[in-house]
Structures are given as structure tokens and as C-alpha cells.
Image 1: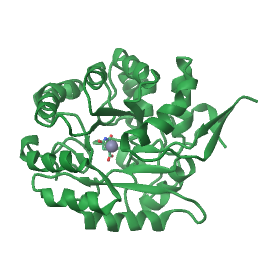
Image 2 (image 1 turned 180 degrees about the vertical axis):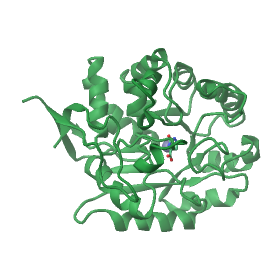
Image 3 (image 1 turned 60 degrees about the horizontal axis):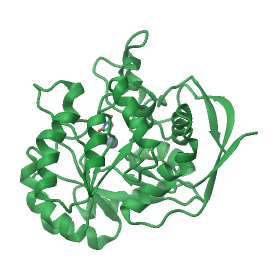
Image 4 (image 1 turned 30 degrees about the vertical axis):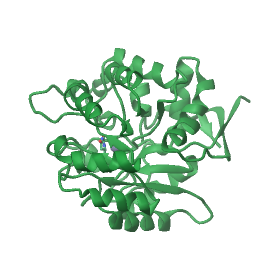
Length: 342
Ligand code: DOR
Ligand code: ZN
């Protein structure tokens, strides 16, 4: 039987939610990953070190008995974030990054930044104390086409930001376009996370045989040419590109409705999905570094030492897994996978 043994991976972009939802999804991540960068877009968001400490305690309390997992916390940047909070975050040791959401860009982003220049004093502090900035890199301008929001963000906001703060360490999260790949390759102090859905699917899947809400996430899936560009980046062996699932659970009720939420749930089978994507371009040998080495290297944390094993075998992704008020539909529910984590 074909098996693949890898250093235990980490997830550098994860939504765990809170309460019953947290209880339901955390065990899936703990099974696959040793650490994860925890997104702060709760209601209300995680804006202070005190919020992050309390959320971290709730996550630690939800880890299944006998398992080990380290949540790496983030703060949610707002127009009013105080540079002093950045200093406190650095001192805390458990806050590892600050997340920028443009106001209104996505789920729970109402508290997000209305104009990125309003945060320059905060970026100054972050640059000084070596605190990474995680970007949801999309503009929210209603006049900009939804498929162009990443490119326009790069042109309008990221290029000027890099000029103002050349030493600020940035992760362009969940990249979806060749433009993002080129920008990351052409600049220092910037890396990118890549999700399984953006490696495996182009935008056609959203309308295959009808409207398919479980493939709707933000940034939205793009044209095949972009998918190929990010797949090439992920499998290139370049340390600037690493794993971040953006697993973003929403109950079936909030996805299968007249105005469904954005987010794909992939924590159940993330490593299997990445393995399939890498295999399509004969690059399974590049998976370990993407999943387990380049992320900790960027975050200046030690690499994990434990191992995981994936086995070549066929299994069917469940239609639904238990969640909060309604069930949770995993990415590619009901379809067959060809790798399975032990
Ligand atoms: O699809 C998404 N879902 N994109 C985001 O940026 C947020 C996330 C969520 O929290 O549901
Ligand atoms: Zn996200």
C-alpha cells in the first residue's frame, strides 16, 4: 500500500468560531495539525490582547482530552487599534499576528478597516516589534467586479503599503490570482497562504449543474488560468507559499439559503485535499515543505518533529458532520477521496 509520511503540518489560516461551533470543529483540526493561526473574526471580533487571551483559553478548554494543539492567536485590526496594543500583543507571546479585513469584505468584517492609511501608526509599531500583518487582500468598492478585487487591492493598497513599510512582514492570505503570485515573488518580506479549494477548483464549480453554495468562499474562486498559477506556486518549492486552509465553517442553514454565507469547511480532510491537488501535477514530494516547513519558517517558530501518515485509499467524504444549530457540509461532500490520513 502506498503511504506518505510527513512532518506534522500546521494550518496558518483557520476559523474556529466559538461556543458549540468551536467544540464541533476543533477536533478535526487537532487530528491533522499541530498549530494553527486562529482568525479573530468573532462577533464581536478579537480586538485586544485580553480578548485574545480569553478566546485562547476557550480554545484550549475545547481540545479533546489527551491531544496537543497550540492556537496561535491574532488580533483584528480596526480604525481605532492603538499602537500600544501591538506592543502588548508582542509581549504576550501568544499573539502571533494582526489581521486586516477591509470593512464589509466578508463574514463578520463590519468592524474592519475603512481606510488602510488610518492604520499607519499601528503598522509602524508592527514593523518595529516584528509583528506580521495578515491581509485579506480584496477591495470592497462596489464598482469593482468581484473577480477583480484581489488585483485591485494589490495595485491600490498593497503596492503603496509596501512602499510605506518595506520591513513590515506581510502574509497575503488565501491568494487566488496570478497577480498575487507575481507580487509575492517580486517583493521581500511578503509570503502567502493558499487554500485547498483555490488549488482544486476554478469558478465553474460554483455553477456546475446548478448553484453550489458550498463552493462559495471569499475571495471567490477564479478563472482556471489563475488556479493553475497558484497551483504552480504552491508546488514550486518556494518558501514564500505555505498552507492555510481558511476552513470557515457555516451551518448548512446559513449556506443553503437565499443569501448564503461565504466559507468552505475543509478541516475534516485538509491534508487529503492538498495531497490530491499536489498529485495532479506530480508534485507530492513538495507537499511536506509547503505544509510543515515554510509556515513555521516565516513565523520564526520551530518546525514540528512529530509525523503524520497519509495512505492511498478510497473513502467517501460524509454528506454532513455534526455542528451547531444545523449540520456542517464539508468541501466536496459525498465525493470520493484518494488519500486518507491515519
Ligand atoms: O469565505 C470566507 N469565509 N472568507 C473569509 O474571508 C471569511 C470566512 C469566514 O469567516 O466565514
Ligand atoms: Zn479566512
